[in-house]
Image (cartoon, rainbow, N blue to C red; front, side, top):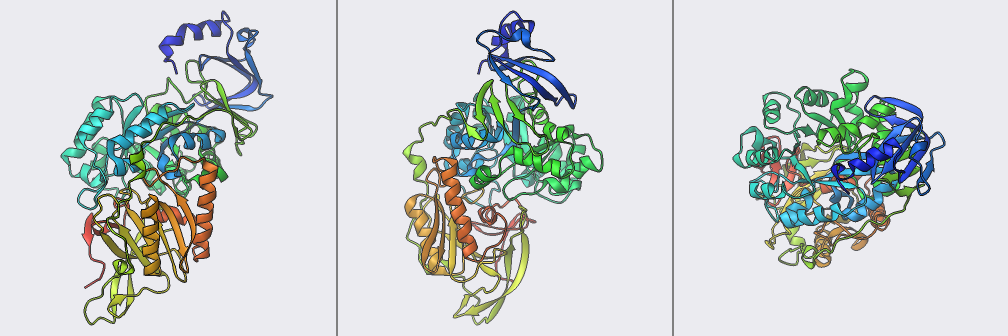
Length: 593
């Protein structure tokens, strides 16, 4: 859209009544997120995609061609902003993600495409950035900072360098640096990490944080000194308070599997801290959540249900976010000069999204998209990213025991429902014919290298999914390096599931009793589909049902599955190089002793 400087004269003339507005919203209750007021009977006039007049009576802005929208006493609130999120987690392209969230009132997103960066490097980031720019809502891109997220502990398809970051900072839609996941590197003064931060700060842009550790001592203070301006990895009140005390914004997330708002929002609702430095976000939402439950409207509703004042919750999803990224004069509130992003709703607590305008244009009404979300051309190379190097067999998933052992003490990755961290468990595992044979709650997990045709398979153990019988599940969505993660109780089916994804170019597959019972095809980088969200969500729902058929009752277990290779979140993870103790940031042996 046109910058303010190009349309300022028009906005002034409309506000003064010398020119008619393009659109007037009449007779609403305008929620002012600057003053935390609800202004009854106010009107809103929009011209050139921006607010021109916001006041008690906009009749002087109405001309013969002006579109007049009758609010009829409904609340007029700013379009919602998602401060930190990954489009790839929705299994959708930027265009299809936008189409899914616009009816929920999301009009601005700050995205970090580090998933595709791990697979396709800077070219993948550029493709995401370019498609984001042509959407009818505002999608800003953060240049990924950490691919690999933990150098020396994993191998990615591509690596991001300080030179890449410097280059991307000149792109029109780049708003800052994506989450600085290599927090040990920052704490240790790693030259590469500090060079990326410096390049971002020289460009006058925002550095995203990611401090996934419960240690709030000197290590945390060293990380804060390194320059990250926000953090979304907090899981409790103490985490939120520690971050804002250091001048960082505390981003509290409610994603498909992350339920971190309730435990942190007490810093505001009970401790009475200034809410200006708290922000709501989603981080990761899969397509099923978007279609069935909502997006940022879901997060705001949840914050209100946790005891937050509705207008404060709205501030944390609008003006606080805009201010954080240096865009307070551009978006985040219904005030003159800002982008004309508006929601009409009849209830501030339940937040039904009845009408959505983005840049002054009606883009959704009554839950239905009323605009186009254009696609860019994705080259053939993005659909050829699953390179296994060989056809896998059951023997590739064997875990050999020490000679003569009847049982072993082994490390087991413990999955925690609704949280990103895992537990480092120890279990006694039986041995049959020289191979580990986990039983009961423990099953096998394998990471299959898929970027460089090495044919490497790393095997380990996992607990928490509740799988029973003979089954396997494989996914090429495996944050952040996005190799292939296979979890199963039967080695032959684990091999079949892995080979299936190798053949079709990526996605998620579930097998039971020797048959595939669900498939989500994700051909773009093995991460995304360009199909509409409702189609991807239907396939994802079938996947969830298939997991339940295999005995899994965990909430959003797929998200847990996809994060088992995320080697920057404690305690225990798997990578293409082995089992990783994230509390020490070092490789560790599976079998004790």
